[in-house]
Structure formats: structure tokens, C-alpha cells
Image 1 (tube, rainbow, N blue to C red):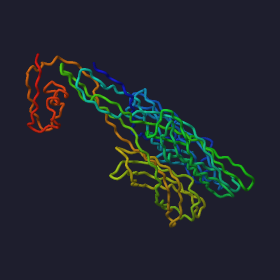
Image 2 (image 1 turned 90 degrees about the vertical axis):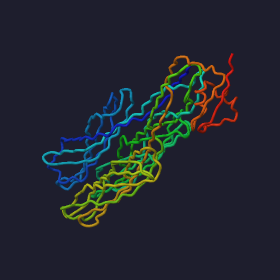
Image 3 (image 1 turned 30 degrees about the vertical axis):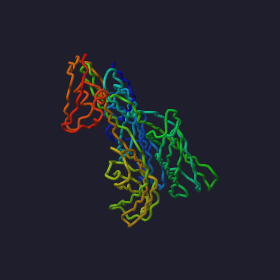
Image 4 (image 1 turned 45 degrees about the horizontal axis):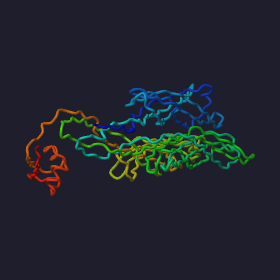
Length: 491
């Protein structure tokens, strides 16, 4: 008598980010030989993420890349990794497929009798949970109304590896000090049977040439076509990219080297579709009482994405240090989003730009860590909520006055909107006692203001067709006091 159908649904589960300090003291380095630290570049990545009931176990790795000048004035670069594990509390269950991200918030290095490298990392975890709902779709021998509901459902989750490469000319490269690379999605669109993703890698190589520190900058755009047969045009797409590994290859001839950057980028795409289903919205039986259980389910899902480039300007004070003569290089720069929220006409993104500026003063090479807070208003429509991820596209510094260094940067920001989809449906029906039948030859219904045909049918225990047959001019909604007369044939 009552027919139910199961529909696939998907829900995005996000957990609040957790911060922790990762410290590492490398062996084999003579701390006494470090005259001055010039830059500490730090990146974090996820090694594994596993769900449990109520939390996610995340294992990560922090990559410390230290550039320093030794007591002989030689600039050197060293590279270290430090692994960590952390528990991220959230509304997870053991069956969830969890993904996580590691962002570096702060870094520090101390050199005394030994070297201690430290970083504050922010670890976030989320899951695209596949669930299902079971709704009433038909009811025999009942008067019913139907409606179409929209249920968000995962169509595809795909991961691919994308190689990227670029090169530039240089002089005689004596040593490579630091490689700093970031990747970001510029746009992702679903087509029939595929997802077209446009992204870019921004990389900077700091090296020594002729005894001087120099940098080579690379902007490497790439497009990837990810095959997924179930995907259709118009599906919602969320994509992430991360530089998994990178290396520098030197070639060419003496005095005219070629610096080639080779990177491996991990690309992951998630595709959602609002699938429409026809369900029973309301019903009643003429012969029996029925008890209906209604369920309201909410699903968080992503919507549109937008990429924008924004300018950031700030200064770094040298405090009581000697005055700067000239900027040599900016080997490392990162921006961290502290808050992203929807606003009346778009979104507001707040964060901090961190950059290591190497400069010269009366004693030779020196450096300062510049911290530039920013707040950006970005136009657009971003649903119920928004997430933001940013990279430093370009950064430059110059001495403004002896005690200050001016920072100008262009940051690329990817914004992803989120919405909450609410689905209401009848999840169960219980058949009750038989109704006492109306045996009157004539029934009269006096309407309240706004009554619908549904109210008349239930009161008179008649079908809409029977009522309209005897009241052909009846139109709803009814007015206060309007009368509906129904004649019943008695045998």
C-alpha cells in the first residue's frame, strides 16, 4: 500500500581547525658557525588522514628549509623534515573518507648551542559523507499531493598527479639555497564525462651566482582534463591542488646555466549534483486514520568558486637594528587566511602575509620577517558561507627609510561558496483505525480564510474530483465563511 524509495545523498562534514607546535633540532649542524639566519621557509603536508568516531587522526610532515650565512660569509641552505600526528575532533564516523590540510601559521628559529626550528601549524579535516534518505513515493487508495525535492549527491571523487616544468636562463650558479613552490586552482568546470581544471604553480628559486644571492621566479599555469563518465555539465565542482614534490635541475654551459624547475602536483576533484526526486508531500485515507512521520534533513554542500588577485601593501620595521642599505631578495613568502565570511555584497577575507626579506646593512647580509595583516572585500555571491585559500603570486620589497622596508605583494585567492540544502519528506506511515463514515445524504463545509481543497476533502471524506463535480465554480484558497455543499448517494 505504501511505497518507499531510497535516494543517495551527500553531506560535507567540517571540523574546527586545530593548532599545534612542531619543533625540530637537526643534528650535524654546527650552530656556532651560523653567523646570521636569513630565511626559514616552512611548508606542511598531510601524509595520512583516518576517521574514527568523533575525531580524525592526521599524520603530517613539516618541511623546514633554512638559509643562513656562516662565519666566513658563505651563504648556505639546508633542508629538514619533521613528522607529527594530531587528533582533530569533529562529527566524524569511522566509515568516513577524511581529507585534511596543513597550513603554517608561524615559524621561528633559535641558534645558540644548538639549532631549534619551530612552526605553528593549523590542521583542518573534512569529509564528504555519502548517506541516503528513504522517502514515501506512493500511497495506494489515498488522496495525496506530491512535490519534487532536490537532494545533493556525490557524483565523482577523482585524484590525479600532474607534472609541471619550466626553466630560465642564469649565469654561473654556484649553489641553490631554497626552492619555494605553491599551487592554487584558478577554476574548475564540469563537462559531459569530464572535469576541466585550470590551475597555476608559483615557484621561486633562490641561488648564489658570482657570490650574490639571486632569485628566479616561475609562474606555471596548467590545464588538466579529469575523466569521469558520470559527470554532467552544470555539476558543482570543488578542486584542490598541492605541490607534492619539487626539484631543481641545472644544465647549460659554464657561465650560462639553465635553471629548470620540475614539480609534481596532486590534484583532487569532488563533484556534486542536485538530484531531483518526486515524493509524497501529504496524504490522507478516506477509510482509515493514518499517522505520518516527517523528517527534515539538512545537507551542507559546495557551490560556486571564484578566483581573484588582490594587492597587499605593508611595511616591516627594523627596530633597533642598523639601517638597511638595499634589499637583496625575498626568498620566501606565504599568506594565511585567518577568517573568511560572507558579507552583504560578497565576502570578507582576513589574513596575514609573511615574507622573509634579505637585505644589506653596515655589517653585510641581514634579514627580517615581515608580517602584513590584510582585510579584503571581494564582490560576488557566496551562499550561506565561504572558504578561502590563498597563495602569493608576486612579492617585492624595497628600503623606504633606513628603519623600514616596504612590502608589495599580489595574492591569489580562491573562494568556494557553501550552502545548506534542506529536504523534507515523509519517512514512515502507520495505518490506523477505520474512520467512522459520514452517512449523511447532505454535508456542509463552512470554510475558514485560506482553506485549500485539502481541508475540504478531509472534512467531507471525499475526493477532490467528487467535490469539484458538485461544486464546479469552487476555487481555492477559500474565503472566510464560504460554503461547500456535498451530496452523498446512500444505498
